[in-house]
Image (spheres, rainbow, N blue to C red):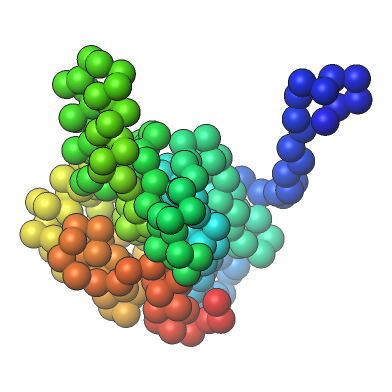
Amino acid sequence: TPEGDAGEMLFLGELIDGESLDTLIDSRKLYEVDEGEDASAVLQKRIGTMAMQLFAALAHVHACGVVHQDVKPANIMVDTNTWRISLIDFGASTIAKPDDFDGRGNVRAPMKGSTPVFASSRQRRLHAKLRTLRDVNKKRELLQSELLSQLDDMWSATVTCLEMFAGGSAWRGNMASSDAWAAAGRTLSNIPLGSMQVALPAAVKDVLEACLGSAGATGGVETAQQVADDLARACGVAV
């Protein structure tokens, strides 16, 4: 608490020497490599490792009983010396009740906010329902009856990973991610190869596709830690 002002609380955060992921994508700095390097191999390893870090960060967040709800490139800071990522901006996050998380990555909490193009189908449906309600109590009841889970964060994280490989929104035709997933027949195999800035390795594609399938309730993985482990194996790096 600042001296002389007991009514305020001061939070200190890590100073991150870097830039936001969306800035690095837009400026193409994310895709810069040294002269003479195998650009494809370097970038696949770089982005794959960053994707693994993102899911590892979410695994910690979920184990603490928090649903972030707004995972996107603008909310990720990157140290461009090491390509280490940090998940930031918990302004839209909610904390689960003690009985609604298990400390192992399964968590349920009320929706608070999201960015539509990165939001899961469930988040978008809830937003649509809320727009039809005027009564505050009914809105509150809806949010308490239809909780979000770790799967909704995992959806947004997967979309973020695809934005890294694609160099932006080209892979989804500038549609909302849930619409693009439906239009592609719920498989990444139907995403045009020409929309990718960096070729999506088959093993990584399989992991990300399983993650999107989980959020769509069609099977797949259950926790962010599982995805982090799968990506580490796919990229040959340590979690």
